[in-house]
Length: 420
Image 1 (tube, rainbow, N blue to C red):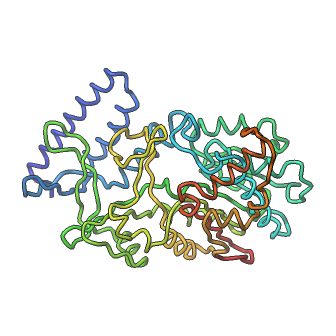
Image 2: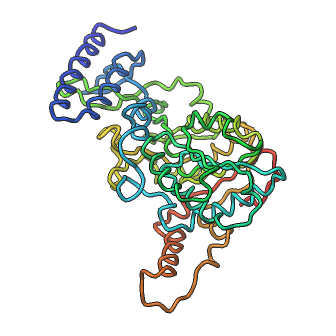
Image 3: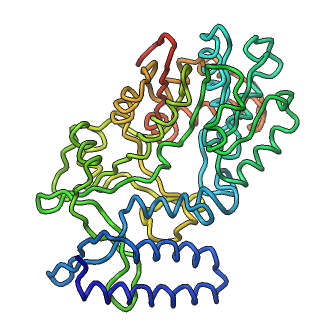
């Protein structure tokens, strides 16, 4: 039941929100004003209350879960980071993916996809889900170009993304490809329909998708488990702040129990229920085929290590990383490492079979990257061979990311291969 104090706090929050929005609009920052409005409206109308401690006393504030806050920041239809604004990937964006480091990763993914498509005698379609600007797909298709591979004869290939600017960039990049007639650019909703498909089987790749789903933040404090919420400060500034919500969510409790996740006092972790939901939806789309997941993350034991006491949540803006998700909402990426133990368990419940799991480094080696290294006598550091050698070294060795990134291949209706 809402107390009189909390009622007046909500009125105060709405008055502050209106004043803040007017200030932002006067400054010409319409995007910031609009997304703050979304967040403020959700907080003001929420039935959830969280506790913040001030001077030893607990104060209840209207709030939303961190997961819902992150969803607004990233996926609001009009103002979310992945739904609006300019291109987010590459030099002019906020982060790079492995496909930006030369064409090596794309070539090896193409080889892997071809291997799996060949397992289906009647042929298979292919797709990249959450493709961004389509750079990885461009590399995959370029690798197949000029090939006499029979799998290309009647394949349908979908580049799937929900960001309008990303799809526009992808469209430009494939205009000159000889594969253009069978390439379709689709939103996720459109791709979930089967009208673009030519085959029952499909081989799909998703590169750095799972880490971008909104996550619940869970913390152990004074022996109890709490979910982190987001509220407006109960003072004259009324900025966004964290509050604690007693953990009552049955799905989160089941997730923690199933994955044997026991937190230390003061420890915080991320729980990615949305990734599990996505796997079940994709399973309905893939009656037969393979799903190739490439992402950064670890096993449960590693994520619960003492060195990860504060979790793995990070933000990226202009290629600068930081850990404050409450600044620049809608204008920065927010991400968390993937729990691959949980993903594999969920995939099994969704009807998938694990066919392969390894680090990105091992995946590249398994698909022959070491044979792509060449000695060269050129003194030109920008020669094609020199650039390619550097790309391979960077993918294999740089900053330990080749070990942090994993490749997980899940299948339905096909015999498995090597499992690392």
